[in-house]
Length: 460
Image (cartoon, rainbow, N blue to C red; front, side, top):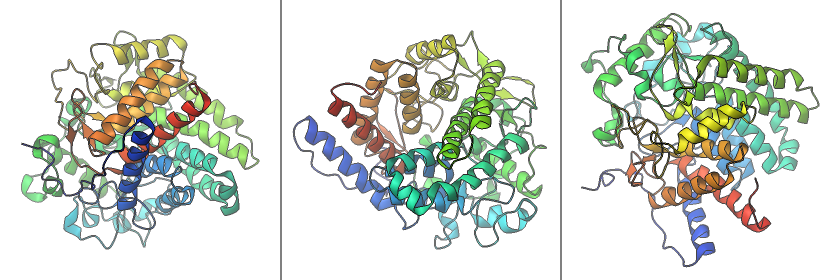
């Protein structure tokens, strides 16, 4: 059975021209068509069927790719998201489109009740959002978008407009979410970390009593195969955590789930470096932000690095111990150029070792008991993590490995119809197709590859 035949958001395919240059061009055109089809006029939905609203970290990755297609649209993407920021600084993980029927996605606005339950935290009165957050890729995205067309950015006052909001976002994470007291940001729901049903969450989630199955209806199963999606048990626990958080006025700190995650914090650190650059562009000193990013890098290594595993591990704050599961989250800190040399070298070895060595980097340990090549974040390869790891490999001088990952990511993205995620061994499409961040990040990798070819080498 074709496991993607039931999906409604596969883009129309275009005949591939012959020759390497023509093939690259046709891949670019197909990726552009996905982004055109998912553009709403002010933002980009991840996919028309499965995810019909605006998602936080999706928009960050989408903007990174859109900057090559339309810097103005890329700027608008981020500005639209930031317009939904709460008074306490948080950027909600979903901004709801009021024209989309409530039953098109769950949890819907009437579940989150942001404008009432989130009033004390400064939720917008005129926009409906969720109350949780997602990984802070936004400042990095804003800086890359600015660099794509500095003239347009300066003429529009793009960085001057987004900088105060991004600074408030980081303050929220660094102060309100430092639940462990060591300086790292904590997530209080698996959806916040972005890798929803990772086996890393199995032990922390086991403490959570699931919401009754009859109390909610999963709209995601209308668009995705059940074997590709989280189980009903996991979903019941997600709903319980979110409902308890909502009923507590969206005040973090007292729930059953509190985890320090290496990928979330690596993106925060990378975005702190980007904020320092943005500050410099605006004529303000970025020294304090650079120092903070360096200090957080040290804390990340001290607190979450596991030499025996050769990678970073999550820390369960309620249990007071590391979570002994290997997931792609623990490789993402390779993105940080200031990592100690021995740590970066170990991450590269782990990336190519038996736990993660596949056609594309799996989301979970190939040798782990919970590995499943098709079920969401329990094994499939994702294109945003491949993009992050490609940058990390290049930052630490593993140029040939970065080139190989870049080429495999481009080829698999196009061949899969720009799938949401794929089997890490075969590249078989899973989840939705015509997925926005897959198309956007493919555009970014194609642009970088084209620049390397034009220079007669690699950008290094």
